[in-house]
Amino acid sequence: MSRILVIDDDIDLCEMIGDYLAAEGFTLDSVHNGEEGVQQALAGNHALVVLDVMLPEMSGFEVLRRIRTASAVPVLMLTARGDDVDRIVGLELGADDYLPKPFNPRELVARIRAIQRRISAAAVEVALPPSAHVLLGDVELDSAARVVYRGGTPLDLTSVEFSLLHVLLRLAGQVVSREDLSRQALGRQLQAYDRTIDVHVSNLRKKLGPLGNGGERIKSVRGIGYIYTRTSV
Image 1 (tube, rainbow, N blue to C red):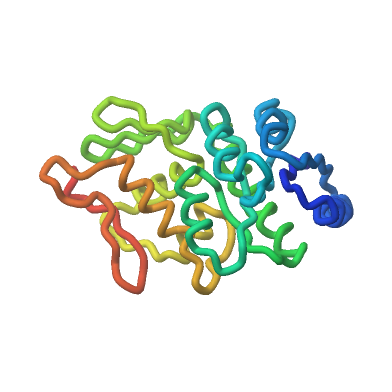
Image 2: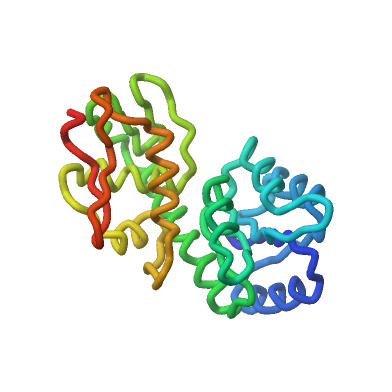
């Protein structure tokens, strides 16, 4: 979990990130164009990818799209500060998290560590003896195999979406705060004006689809968080 790939055309920034991550015990590889970035990310030699949205010739969004066709490697996107559109698009395409530029290197390390904690927690789940499936209506979740079925058909969920659904299903019928979802699904504290959880929940809703009666599976609770309705039983 210590080898990081940075895809960014800013060579000075890559060097700065490399120096800082090296001091934190990470090994850094950097590439400066999208095509090479895709090849490196899909080679399977890195635990995490840090990907800039603004790249020459091929945008970071296209790089992410191509990575997600064949790999679930965690991706942390670097976006322009205050550009909510970039953040939302990146998350909808399967990014695990984002960090706006310019950023404090300590914040980058904190985000990487948070993703590591989430992946480690998932690995512990897989290592444990298989437990009973979480079954609610037509949705079945196997935490050991980390697969989800709706009506017997497997769903293609990102690791964050899986973690979110696992929490919501286990606590079905109870309101789960956005703060708790952030800690359990993203592995970090929720920050002010952070809509990451909301975008991931929106993606999850689209993939799950409505209930058989047309109702919502995951309901918003204004000012608090979300609830997975038990009426799907």
